[in-house]
Image (cartoon, rainbow, N blue to C red; front, side, top):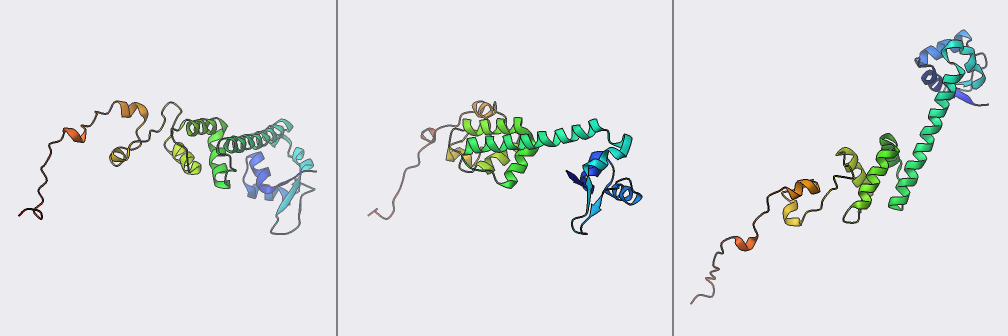
Length: 183
């Protein structure tokens, strides 16, 4: 039989954890037990319907389905990351991608696949894409080294609208004078 912690029941009912502990002391959960202070209270699933109108069977089922959906979504996020990067995500990256959701994760991974150059640091790329809210229609553009010191983080559309810089051949030439060779 499934058991719940005080925190889980509090979230399920929408009450504070201390309220749940008060209910335990008042006898609303007759089969609740505590093995140790460290483990805390365990409330059997059979005691939940005793709450009456506070937790209906339908609400309980809905919360369980939401938990199941979250597990399925995190599994899909992990599989998508592995398919694109050919490596397993770190716990931190899995947490970030789970928060943004499967739809946004797939968008970011699409952007990574469309990148003109191979992405050497997928985690850094994903963090920047989330932070700067990249979308597949605004791909990041790698600029030449001369321009990258002055221009960065431009999208393709922004780069096309920039005025073209003059070539170095257009600039006036200064004659070279070597005083060491002069005699």
